[in-house]
Length: 267
Length: 321
Image (tube, rainbow over all chains, first blue to last red; front, side, top):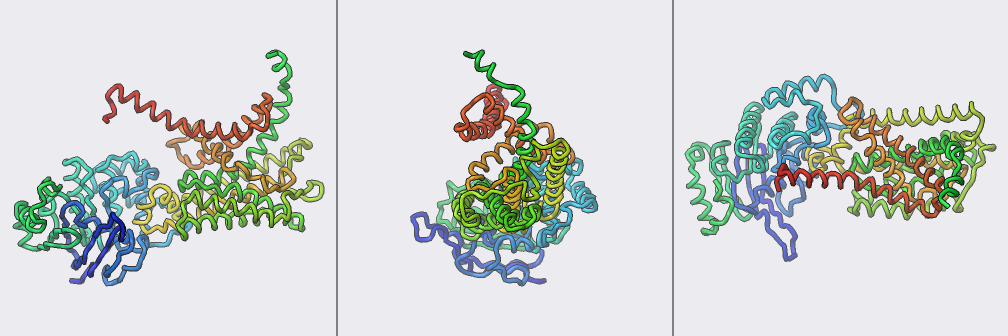
């Protein structure tokens, strides 16, 4: 089994030297094997989303290395890392282009990592392929392929974004609280689709969530972050037997009992 | 007194002005399409336009005076405009200067550049000496010249729309539209938003430069001030087109082509409105003020309409908080 992601001693400080200085990542080390699906939990400001953004290259890290599938991407800008990654964001508006059609959005994603040329942007052949992919979502989007994505609901947009993330098989799928903005029923549906897409494409994935039950129920590995560090890393059988109460205890231990007001409490 | 005022208005004068308005509107439509590309597709308010229009005019006129045929001179006007767009793009992307400020800096700098190109503030070209591609004289000339000119002008603008329709349908064009719509998503999909921004500014200002080259020929001179307020005219064309035809063209096949056509019609209507206002004897000194008010009004309409709509629904309890 090959190694898909290596995060080595990554540090990131926002607003360094100012009154708003915030140590976001404080020496994070993480290695993901191919096919790992890791869920990431932690309180607000623990560094969960920051870690995903560091991997995605949204900004430069201060120290450390990021290696995806053997390639050192530490110095690569965001758009050059995109070929390695599929990304779904917390805000459903973020993952798609609202004023463009469903088919156009998929065509954009299908060309991730390729040169954009003067060939026609969405061909007939690929439209047929997208149609079938949309059918598999079971949301009826295949009948609205030329509709503007802005007309879709949040859940539909997240499902589409997932599909787009997998359309060019990424080395790593980054799910950044991608169900947090959805109602519980839709969130469950989107999670189900996530599981399906990850399984079908044998993807390596990282999923940030605030929901501890989800974090336990999904994936084969779970990490907990606190103050910019990974404080708990569990996988295999131990993870499967994990209870929410275990996580709360673990978190209480790490934060010295200051978690009472935290969003971690909302299970 | 009111009677005297109305009696002094000559309907025939208005009619006679009509072909000139249409021609002028069509020429400016080229620029309006450029403004449409940055303002609507890239979501970038590019004020470079006021400078690059005159740059295009200056380059074309100077080349024509040097003996270059007026048609190929337009290619150089296009390239000159592109270079202006390149500067704005690099100021913004490579040097991190806010977009609107980058474009203002280029615009100001171009004033000197344009003076340098022409050697003075105004350079004339006489239609009797050069085979110009456009001229006011063709509009007022004999019917066959006039017909030829209009067919050529309308054909050129339509051809431009076809080319732009094709371009924005390609992978590259789609990447530009994505950049304008959602830059974060664009980067996540591997699109270099910086490159797309620079490319779009170059294309847009290329069209503006081309328009400047045609317009300088049309009016028989390039002037260092010919682009002053051009951005407002471009925006007016875009917005008039959208407000009047937006609903009509939405959701059809080739919507994008129709949208560009409505921008061109918007440019023509703009000149008609200006002519009517002048015909009603408004002092021409107030024209810029009037233009600004027209653009502000049309820009405000969608906003106010949405607000009003929201209020109405809120009263009925349809919209929550």
